[in-house]
Length: 144
Image (tube, rainbow, N blue to C red; front, side):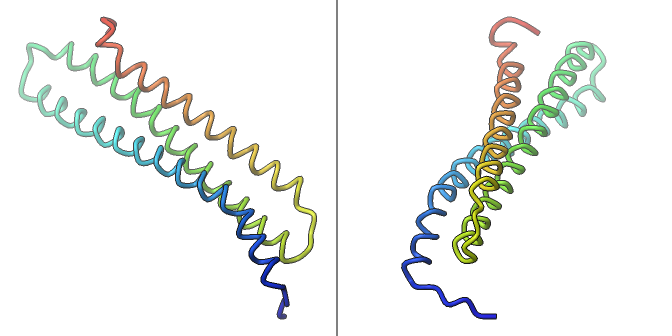
């Protein structure tokens, strides 16, 4: 089955897909930041575990920090999962935009719902990130 479309229709479909692609780039950058933070949390946890094994005197402080790191890792994990879901939803928006253009189907409602879902998952991811930053800076603010 061959679909014969004019070049202008294809160009228009590409123009519609450009904005979500820029959004993909932005969310991917956030995902990179989150992955780096998770890596630092894991490195710090490994360091503290080895320190706790060799030292008995500061074990209570180490356990308190390990508990905080565990909470931070959980928040970052959720933020990463939500950002990844957002990226998948945005990719789906792009695919549906192309399908709608080539098959002359009214996909407006589906595109709107997918985009709203992508934005909601991004908002939830950023809220998790904000909570993780709050926990990470608790020591700076003088709170354990």
